[in-house]
Length: 392
Image 1 (cartoon, rainbow, N blue to C red):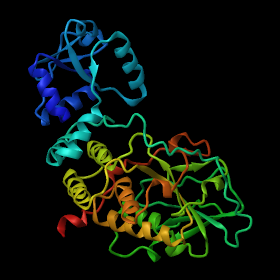
Image 2: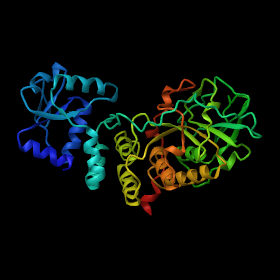
Image 3: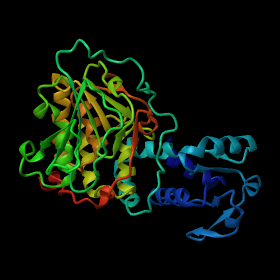
Image 4: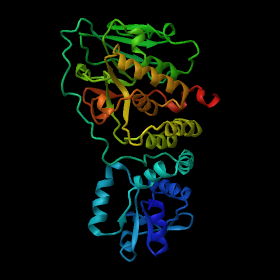
Protein backbone atom coordinates (compact mmCIF):
# COMPACT_ATOMS: atom_id res chain seq x y z
CA UNK A 1 0.00 0.00 0.00
CA UNK A 2 1.26 3.48 -0.86
CA UNK A 3 2.29 5.66 2.07
CA UNK A 4 -0.40 8.30 1.41
CA UNK A 5 -3.12 5.63 1.29
CA UNK A 6 -1.75 4.07 4.47
CA UNK A 7 -1.88 7.42 6.27
CA UNK A 8 -5.49 7.99 5.18
CA UNK A 9 -6.46 4.47 6.25
CA UNK A 10 -4.91 4.89 9.70
CA UNK A 11 -6.57 8.28 10.19
CA UNK A 12 -9.90 6.73 9.29
CA UNK A 13 -9.30 4.18 12.03
CA UNK A 14 -8.68 6.89 14.64
CA UNK A 15 -4.92 7.44 14.40
CA UNK A 16 -3.88 11.09 14.79
CA UNK A 17 -1.46 12.63 12.29
CA UNK A 18 0.90 15.30 13.58
CA UNK A 19 3.75 17.47 12.35
CA UNK A 20 6.50 17.87 14.93
CA UNK A 21 7.66 21.47 14.43
CA UNK A 22 5.34 24.45 14.27
CA UNK A 23 7.98 26.68 12.68
CA UNK A 24 8.86 27.22 9.03
CA UNK A 25 9.92 23.64 8.28
CA UNK A 26 6.70 22.24 9.71
CA UNK A 27 4.54 24.75 7.89
CA UNK A 28 6.31 24.00 4.62
CA UNK A 29 5.57 20.30 4.96
CA UNK A 30 2.02 21.12 5.95
CA UNK A 31 1.70 22.70 2.50
CA UNK A 32 3.12 19.58 0.87
CA UNK A 33 0.59 17.35 2.62
CA UNK A 34 -2.19 19.78 1.78
CA UNK A 35 -1.40 19.53 -1.94
CA UNK A 36 -1.45 15.74 -1.51
CA UNK A 37 -4.91 15.92 0.05
CA UNK A 38 -3.71 14.93 3.52
CA UNK A 39 -4.95 16.81 6.61
CA UNK A 40 -3.07 16.76 9.90
CA UNK A 41 -4.69 16.78 13.33
CA UNK A 42 -2.09 18.77 15.27
CA UNK A 43 1.18 20.58 15.13
CA UNK A 44 3.52 19.79 18.02
CA UNK A 45 6.53 21.74 19.24
CA UNK A 46 8.89 21.84 22.21
CA UNK A 47 8.50 25.64 22.35
CA UNK A 48 5.93 26.33 25.07
CA UNK A 49 5.13 29.75 23.56
CA UNK A 50 3.43 27.94 20.66
CA UNK A 51 1.25 25.60 22.74
CA UNK A 52 -2.46 26.20 22.32
CA UNK A 53 -1.94 28.59 19.42
CA UNK A 54 -3.36 28.14 15.94
CA UNK A 55 -0.56 27.59 13.42
CA UNK A 56 -2.29 27.02 10.06
CA UNK A 57 -5.88 26.45 8.92
CA UNK A 58 -7.29 26.38 12.48
CA UNK A 59 -4.86 23.62 13.45
CA UNK A 60 -3.50 24.03 16.98
CA UNK A 61 -0.02 23.33 18.34
CA UNK A 62 0.11 20.95 21.30
CA UNK A 63 2.89 20.10 23.73
CA UNK A 64 4.95 16.88 23.45
CA UNK A 65 3.34 15.70 26.69
CA UNK A 66 -0.11 15.73 25.09
CA UNK A 67 1.04 13.27 22.42
CA UNK A 68 1.04 10.52 25.04
CA UNK A 69 -2.73 10.94 25.39
CA UNK A 70 -3.25 10.03 21.73
CA UNK A 71 -2.29 7.26 19.34
CA UNK A 72 -0.19 9.35 16.95
CA UNK A 73 1.92 9.06 13.84
CA UNK A 74 3.73 11.96 12.31
CA UNK A 75 6.62 13.73 10.66
CA UNK A 76 9.70 15.39 12.17
CA UNK A 77 10.16 18.63 10.24
CA UNK A 78 13.40 20.15 11.52
CA UNK A 79 16.74 21.05 9.98
CA UNK A 80 19.19 18.28 9.21
CA UNK A 81 21.62 19.36 11.93
CA UNK A 82 19.22 18.53 14.75
CA UNK A 83 17.10 15.78 13.18
CA UNK A 84 18.91 12.81 14.75
CA UNK A 85 18.75 14.38 18.23
CA UNK A 86 15.02 15.07 17.93
CA UNK A 87 14.36 11.60 16.52
CA UNK A 88 16.24 9.94 19.39
CA UNK A 89 14.24 11.94 21.95
CA UNK A 90 10.90 11.07 20.34
CA UNK A 91 11.74 7.38 20.11
CA UNK A 92 13.06 7.30 23.68
CA UNK A 93 9.87 8.88 25.02
CA UNK A 94 7.72 6.83 22.61
CA UNK A 95 5.78 9.94 21.68
CA UNK A 96 4.59 8.84 18.24
CA UNK A 97 5.36 6.65 15.26
CA UNK A 98 7.75 8.54 13.01
CA UNK A 99 7.13 8.62 9.27
CA UNK A 100 10.04 9.87 7.18
CA UNK A 101 9.32 12.90 5.02
CA UNK A 102 11.22 11.13 2.25
CA UNK A 103 8.63 8.34 2.26
CA UNK A 104 6.04 10.81 0.94
CA UNK A 105 8.35 12.36 -1.66
CA UNK A 106 9.56 8.94 -2.80
CA UNK A 107 5.94 7.87 -3.21
CA UNK A 108 5.21 10.87 -5.41
CA UNK A 109 8.31 10.41 -7.55
CA UNK A 110 7.74 6.71 -8.09
CA UNK A 111 3.95 6.55 -8.24
CA UNK A 112 2.31 9.92 -8.88
CA UNK A 113 4.44 12.30 -10.91
CA UNK A 114 1.62 14.73 -11.66
CA UNK A 115 1.18 15.20 -7.93
CA UNK A 116 4.97 15.54 -7.59
CA UNK A 117 4.86 18.42 -10.08
CA UNK A 118 1.96 20.01 -8.20
CA UNK A 119 4.01 19.84 -5.00
CA UNK A 120 7.03 21.26 -6.82
CA UNK A 121 5.10 24.25 -8.19
CA UNK A 122 3.50 24.96 -4.82
CA UNK A 123 6.83 24.61 -3.02
CA UNK A 124 8.22 27.32 -5.27
CA UNK A 125 5.67 29.76 -3.84
CA UNK A 126 6.60 29.14 -0.19
CA UNK A 127 9.26 30.69 2.03
CA UNK A 128 12.67 29.10 1.59
CA UNK A 129 14.07 26.43 3.91
CA UNK A 130 15.99 23.21 3.32
CA UNK A 131 13.12 20.84 4.06
CA UNK A 132 14.13 17.97 1.77
CA UNK A 133 17.41 16.28 2.59
CA UNK A 134 18.87 12.79 2.82
CA UNK A 135 19.85 11.63 6.27
CA UNK A 136 22.43 9.21 4.91
CA UNK A 137 23.50 10.24 1.39
CA UNK A 138 25.16 7.87 -1.08
CA UNK A 139 28.37 7.37 0.88
CA UNK A 140 30.91 8.25 -1.83
CA UNK A 141 32.77 10.55 0.54
CA UNK A 142 36.54 10.23 0.03
CA UNK A 143 38.36 13.21 1.51
CA UNK A 144 40.41 15.57 -0.58
CA UNK A 145 43.73 14.67 1.05
CA UNK A 146 43.53 11.05 -0.09
CA UNK A 147 45.70 9.70 -2.92
CA UNK A 148 47.49 12.51 -4.69
CA UNK A 149 48.17 12.28 -8.42
CA UNK A 150 51.88 12.57 -9.16
CA UNK A 151 52.21 15.39 -11.67
CA UNK A 152 56.00 15.43 -11.65
CA UNK A 153 56.27 13.01 -14.55
CA UNK A 154 53.63 14.75 -16.67
CA UNK A 155 54.91 16.69 -19.72
CA UNK A 156 52.05 19.15 -19.30
CA UNK A 157 51.30 21.34 -16.34
CA UNK A 158 47.99 21.92 -14.63
CA UNK A 159 45.76 24.96 -15.17
CA UNK A 160 43.78 26.43 -12.27
CA UNK A 161 41.09 28.78 -13.49
CA UNK A 162 38.08 30.85 -12.53
CA UNK A 163 35.56 32.81 -14.58
CA UNK A 164 33.79 35.94 -13.30
CA UNK A 165 31.02 37.90 -15.03
CA UNK A 166 28.33 40.43 -14.24
CA UNK A 167 29.63 41.60 -10.89
CA UNK A 168 28.39 38.41 -9.20
CA UNK A 169 31.80 37.88 -7.57
CA UNK A 170 34.84 40.08 -7.07
CA UNK A 171 38.33 38.73 -7.58
CA UNK A 172 39.32 36.18 -4.92
CA UNK A 173 43.02 35.49 -5.41
CA UNK A 174 44.83 32.50 -3.83
CA UNK A 175 46.73 32.66 -0.56
CA UNK A 176 48.70 29.59 -1.63
CA UNK A 177 50.41 29.31 -5.01
CA UNK A 178 51.68 26.01 -6.40
CA UNK A 179 54.47 26.91 -8.83
CA UNK A 180 53.83 23.70 -10.75
CA UNK A 181 50.43 25.06 -11.74
CA UNK A 182 49.43 27.93 -14.01
CA UNK A 183 46.59 30.26 -13.00
CA UNK A 184 43.99 31.74 -15.34
CA UNK A 185 41.35 34.42 -14.84
CA UNK A 186 38.60 34.50 -17.48
CA UNK A 187 36.41 37.59 -17.78
CA UNK A 188 35.15 40.19 -20.25
CA UNK A 189 37.44 42.87 -18.84
CA UNK A 190 40.89 42.43 -17.32
CA UNK A 191 40.89 43.26 -13.58
CA UNK A 192 43.20 46.15 -12.71
CA UNK A 193 44.57 44.35 -9.66
CA UNK A 194 45.23 40.98 -11.35
CA UNK A 195 48.37 39.42 -9.76
CA UNK A 196 51.35 38.84 -12.03
CA UNK A 197 51.14 35.05 -11.75
CA UNK A 198 47.65 35.12 -13.35
CA UNK A 199 47.09 34.79 -17.08
CA UNK A 200 44.07 36.78 -18.19
CA UNK A 201 41.83 35.21 -20.84
CA UNK A 202 39.46 37.46 -22.78
CA UNK A 203 36.14 35.64 -22.55
CA UNK A 204 34.89 37.38 -25.69
CA UNK A 205 37.35 35.32 -27.70
CA UNK A 206 36.06 31.95 -26.50
CA UNK A 207 32.34 32.39 -25.72
CA UNK A 208 29.79 32.37 -28.59
CA UNK A 209 28.11 35.73 -29.19
CA UNK A 210 24.60 34.45 -28.48
CA UNK A 211 25.52 33.82 -24.83
CA UNK A 212 24.90 37.11 -23.07
CA UNK A 213 23.82 36.38 -19.49
CA UNK A 214 26.55 36.42 -16.81
CA UNK A 215 25.52 33.02 -15.47
CA UNK A 216 25.63 31.33 -18.86
CA UNK A 217 28.94 32.96 -19.73
CA UNK A 218 30.42 31.58 -16.54
CA UNK A 219 29.03 28.10 -17.17
CA UNK A 220 30.29 27.99 -20.75
CA UNK A 221 33.83 28.58 -19.51
CA UNK A 222 33.30 26.24 -16.58
CA UNK A 223 32.23 23.38 -18.85
CA UNK A 224 34.68 23.90 -21.75
CA UNK A 225 38.28 23.86 -20.50
CA UNK A 226 39.12 21.55 -23.42
CA UNK A 227 38.43 24.41 -25.85
CA UNK A 228 40.89 26.95 -24.42
CA UNK A 229 43.26 24.98 -22.20
CA UNK A 230 44.37 22.44 -24.79
CA UNK A 231 48.02 22.89 -23.86
CA UNK A 232 47.27 21.42 -20.44
CA UNK A 233 46.30 17.86 -19.55
CA UNK A 234 44.69 18.80 -16.22
CA UNK A 235 42.64 21.66 -14.87
CA UNK A 236 40.96 22.72 -11.65
CA UNK A 237 37.98 25.03 -11.94
CA UNK A 238 37.04 27.22 -8.96
CA UNK A 239 33.95 29.39 -8.54
CA UNK A 240 34.87 33.05 -8.26
CA UNK A 241 34.11 33.28 -4.54
CA UNK A 242 36.50 30.47 -3.53
CA UNK A 243 39.80 31.31 -1.85
CA UNK A 244 42.63 28.79 -2.24
CA UNK A 245 44.34 28.48 1.15
CA UNK A 246 46.53 25.41 0.62
CA UNK A 247 47.88 23.06 -2.03
CA UNK A 248 45.06 21.68 -4.20
CA UNK A 249 47.15 19.27 -6.30
CA UNK A 250 45.49 16.39 -4.44
CA UNK A 251 42.22 17.32 -6.15
CA UNK A 252 43.53 15.66 -9.30
CA UNK A 253 42.58 12.00 -9.30
CA UNK A 254 42.45 9.07 -11.67
CA UNK A 255 38.97 7.94 -12.74
CA UNK A 256 37.14 6.56 -15.72
CA UNK A 257 35.71 9.99 -16.59
CA UNK A 258 38.72 12.05 -15.48
CA UNK A 259 36.35 14.15 -13.33
CA UNK A 260 36.70 14.80 -9.58
CA UNK A 261 34.03 16.70 -7.62
CA UNK A 262 32.61 17.13 -4.13
CA UNK A 263 29.44 15.27 -3.26
CA UNK A 264 26.29 17.17 -2.33
CA UNK A 265 26.07 17.33 1.50
CA UNK A 266 22.26 17.35 1.68
CA UNK A 267 20.79 15.26 -1.13
CA UNK A 268 21.45 12.36 -3.48
CA UNK A 269 18.65 12.75 -6.01
CA UNK A 270 17.99 15.37 -8.69
CA UNK A 271 14.23 15.08 -8.14
CA UNK A 272 14.75 16.19 -4.53
CA UNK A 273 17.19 18.87 -5.66
CA UNK A 274 14.53 20.22 -8.03
CA UNK A 275 12.23 20.84 -5.06
CA UNK A 276 14.97 22.68 -3.19
CA UNK A 277 16.12 24.98 -5.99
CA UNK A 278 12.54 25.96 -6.82
CA UNK A 279 11.85 26.72 -3.15
CA UNK A 280 14.95 28.95 -3.04
CA UNK A 281 13.67 30.79 -6.15
CA UNK A 282 16.78 29.90 -8.15
CA UNK A 283 14.83 29.01 -11.28
CA UNK A 284 11.36 29.10 -12.78
CA UNK A 285 9.19 26.24 -11.51
CA UNK A 286 7.63 25.58 -14.93
CA UNK A 287 11.10 25.20 -16.47
CA UNK A 288 12.11 22.71 -13.80
CA UNK A 289 8.86 20.75 -14.22
CA UNK A 290 9.45 20.53 -17.95
CA UNK A 291 13.03 19.36 -17.41
CA UNK A 292 12.17 16.77 -14.76
CA UNK A 293 9.25 15.48 -16.83
CA UNK A 294 11.60 14.87 -19.75
CA UNK A 295 14.09 13.13 -17.48
CA UNK A 296 11.32 10.92 -16.12
CA UNK A 297 10.25 10.06 -19.69
CA UNK A 298 13.81 9.20 -20.71
CA UNK A 299 14.27 6.97 -17.67
CA UNK A 300 16.69 9.07 -15.62
CA UNK A 301 16.91 7.04 -12.39
CA UNK A 302 15.67 8.19 -9.03
CA UNK A 303 18.41 8.57 -6.36
CA UNK A 304 21.19 8.35 -8.94
CA UNK A 305 23.45 10.47 -6.75
CA UNK A 306 24.22 14.17 -6.61
CA UNK A 307 27.43 16.14 -6.87
CA UNK A 308 27.99 19.81 -6.01
CA UNK A 309 29.92 21.75 -8.62
CA UNK A 310 31.78 24.84 -7.30
CA UNK A 311 35.07 22.94 -7.69
CA UNK A 312 35.86 20.59 -10.59
CA UNK A 313 39.22 18.88 -11.13
CA UNK A 314 39.54 17.29 -14.55
CA UNK A 315 41.72 15.45 -16.97
CA UNK A 316 39.91 17.70 -19.38
CA UNK A 317 41.34 16.43 -22.70
CA UNK A 318 40.14 12.90 -21.93
CA UNK A 319 37.42 11.81 -24.37
CA UNK A 320 35.07 10.61 -21.64
CA UNK A 321 35.38 13.94 -19.82
CA UNK A 322 34.70 15.95 -22.98
CA UNK A 323 31.61 13.87 -23.74
CA UNK A 324 30.15 14.55 -20.29
CA UNK A 325 31.03 18.26 -20.47
CA UNK A 326 29.43 18.73 -23.90
CA UNK A 327 26.22 16.99 -22.79
CA UNK A 328 26.25 19.02 -19.58
CA UNK A 329 26.51 22.28 -21.48
CA UNK A 330 23.75 21.32 -23.93
CA UNK A 331 21.43 20.60 -21.01
CA UNK A 332 22.38 23.72 -19.09
CA UNK A 333 22.03 25.89 -22.19
CA UNK A 334 18.62 24.47 -23.05
CA UNK A 335 17.06 23.79 -19.66
CA UNK A 336 16.60 25.40 -16.25
CA UNK A 337 20.27 26.32 -15.83
CA UNK A 338 21.17 24.67 -12.56
CA UNK A 339 24.46 22.77 -12.45
CA UNK A 340 23.46 19.86 -10.25
CA UNK A 341 20.35 18.88 -12.21
CA UNK A 342 21.98 18.87 -15.63
CA UNK A 343 25.34 17.39 -14.57
CA UNK A 344 23.85 14.22 -13.13
CA UNK A 345 21.75 13.78 -16.27
CA UNK A 346 24.86 14.28 -18.44
CA UNK A 347 26.71 11.66 -16.42
CA UNK A 348 23.84 9.16 -16.80
CA UNK A 349 23.30 9.97 -20.49
CA UNK A 350 26.92 9.03 -21.19
CA UNK A 351 26.52 5.71 -19.34
CA UNK A 352 28.48 6.76 -16.26
CA UNK A 353 27.62 6.70 -12.55
CA UNK A 354 29.10 8.31 -9.44
CA UNK A 355 31.52 5.38 -9.33
CA UNK A 356 33.09 6.74 -12.52
CA UNK A 357 33.94 10.02 -10.75
CA UNK A 358 36.36 10.66 -7.91
CA UNK A 359 34.94 12.24 -4.79
CA UNK A 360 36.82 15.14 -3.21
CA UNK A 361 34.77 14.89 -0.03
CA UNK A 362 31.30 14.99 1.45
CA UNK A 363 31.01 18.77 1.79
CA UNK A 364 33.07 21.32 -0.12
CA UNK A 365 32.56 23.87 2.67
CA UNK A 366 34.39 21.62 5.12
CA UNK A 367 37.49 21.32 2.96
CA UNK A 368 40.38 23.02 4.78
CA UNK A 369 42.27 23.73 1.55
CA UNK A 370 39.75 26.31 0.36
CA UNK A 371 37.40 28.91 1.84
CA UNK A 372 34.18 30.42 0.57
CA UNK A 373 33.93 34.21 0.46
CA UNK A 374 30.67 36.14 0.22
CA UNK A 375 29.13 36.74 -3.20
CA UNK A 376 28.92 40.38 -4.22
CA UNK A 377 25.23 39.76 -4.98
CA UNK A 378 22.81 36.87 -4.86
CA UNK A 379 22.67 34.68 -7.96
CA UNK A 380 18.88 35.07 -8.07
CA UNK A 381 19.47 38.77 -8.73
CA UNK A 382 21.82 38.16 -11.67
CA UNK A 383 19.84 38.30 -14.92
CA UNK A 384 19.72 34.98 -16.75
CA UNK A 385 18.50 34.04 -20.18
CA UNK A 386 15.16 32.40 -20.83
CA UNK A 387 15.08 28.60 -20.83
CA UNK A 388 15.55 27.71 -24.52
CA UNK A 389 13.71 24.40 -24.18
CA UNK A 390 10.50 26.29 -23.33
CA UNK A 391 10.31 27.66 -26.87
CA UNK A 392 11.21 24.43 -28.67
